[in-house]
Image 1 (tube, rainbow, N blue to C red):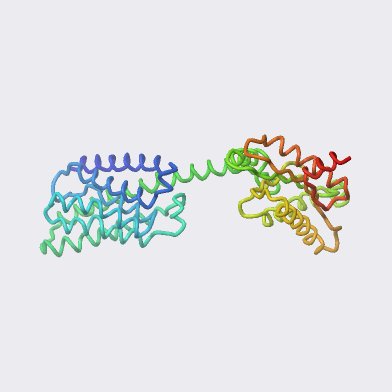
Image 2: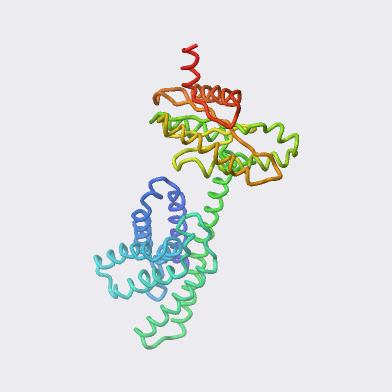
Length: 362
């Protein structure tokens, strides 16, 4: 009589596999509060439609999706998930439906939510295996108490059947958690590799490859400003204090720029001692204040350390005229403006438009 419950467990695992593959889709994450209860509830109904050998071994594992929902999302989504199969039981008017709803959906939703951890809400955290086993044991005790109260004459056969249900449930939940954790580890490894491919290893800032992708996509919709930033006298600093101190300086300047730029702007390491910033500000006066703030912040920070000379930066600025401008052309203009800043005394900013205006007047 046991092959059918094991077959039901295989159906459950197959449904879980499909759900895991759908989990990382954009629309799934964006509308998680709707899609998670809907898919979980439908999975419960599919499990309820599977055949059962007899009443004594009446475990279709329909509560398993509810347990996973509680572990992953907490009480709200798990209870919303329980509403769908509960409504189905009410519609088909199943005998002792209220007991089925309480035993297989409401109670598992509440108990599993008690083991929910806040970090699981990201959808990419690892669920402890023992949590699933503990939930199954608690549910077994509740099931024994409820059935014992209803039947009042509990036989040895009843206990042995409940033990089989407990073992089967624990194995099924454990398997679902293993699948979920393995999928999440693969996802996190993939994201880590993607981050490494788009991140500068020294400063932790995005690298030029990542910057070009972001900036190109942004310029398709709006004009932007490109600022080229160079650390003044970096070669002399390197020769004086050594490459290790030079690397530390690059890291510090990178962090200063990261924390000083505006919220919607983007900074990356361009290469060597150069950084590049994309800003959505295109107003001349605002950019002048912005660039001046960058220069002042770097100089003020370095002035705190008395054992080392003050470090400054030079900035070159180019404003795109429209969203149809070429990114490489704007970067080239900002780079030319940067060299003008360095040639004019350093620790300052220069607009490419000022270079053009000066050239026309001479």
